Image (tube, rainbow, N blue to C red; front, side):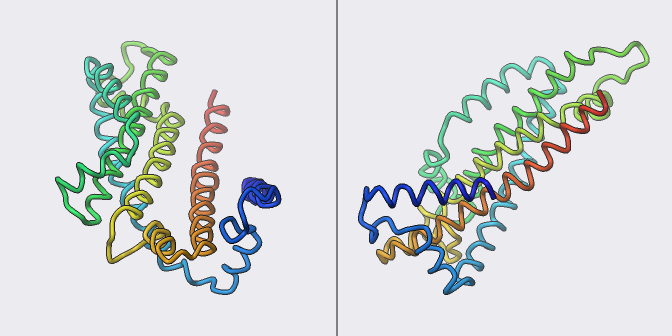
Length: 243
């Protein structure tokens, strides 16, 4: 709620500055009133976008998790894999779309391809960072301590939960960005919020453009703050209790 209040206040202050005429930059309350007049106008496309985001994030977790776990289990792979995923993270998702269109074609799978290649690296790096910190913190617990895959599964990965969640959270942000970019760039039967944004812009309906942007912002804040924020605080409290 604080984030939304600050967002609305900042928006209104810009409007009051008369930086742009209100037909180009309407007041947030004008936009909210328009949304109130047709509250169901965005529900269908919001559902499409959230569904695609869930599929994309799940695929990225599967790919990034597999890369991270394998590299964490095989010591010599850790440094080179960490360097590779760090390099991939520097590439904006939008630069992958030309390659995706060539390789996959104009379809939802192009967007999924870009989501995975953008969101998997931070997830893999979160696992590697967590494994490194947990290993240094706990060390070997003696000759009776589990080794190899058993130690990784029962000791190291559970102890790395905070770092892994941070990687997944970063992956979610990149997934959300990559998905909306793809929906804006590609013309698909299922528009989603990004496609609706591009459609309203093509109609020069400026108020509707800001309506879609508000929906995207609210959904992003809710998922990141409520879901990932709550999970992160719970893990931190658990770590503090366990010592």
